[in-house]
Image 1 (cartoon, one colour):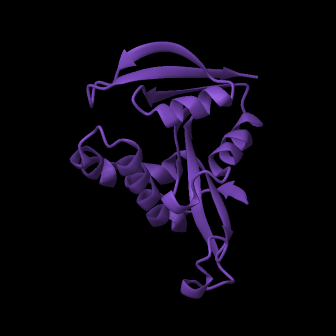
Image 2 (spheres, helix red, strand yellow):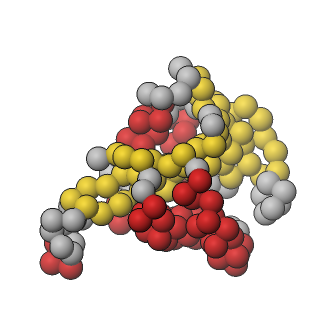
Length: 154
């Protein structure tokens, strides 16, 4: 199920943000993400965020979890028509959650854009499969890494 962010989701969302960035961007020092963690956690409740959740036990974790509770497995954050990021926890990746979150937003927007690191080939390929095109190439001021501005229009 996809729904809007609740205040009580912030800790889990921030945890997914940090873990996903560390995994996907091994070419950027971990300290960069760790230093930005608190600021991101503070901004999350103010952003347009949609979370993906499902009943616990869907990942074979039923013995560790309360089977009646839902678990957040991913989220997408927006600033207007700009996607700040799509984040899916490690054990739930490659299950269509990122695509479901993106499709949810595409239903609500006519145009979307985002920046993605050029070295993050998995993400670049994902967005190209989802009909985003590379608009321009630039450099992220904060990391010095090359990135693409990618654009989608309905």
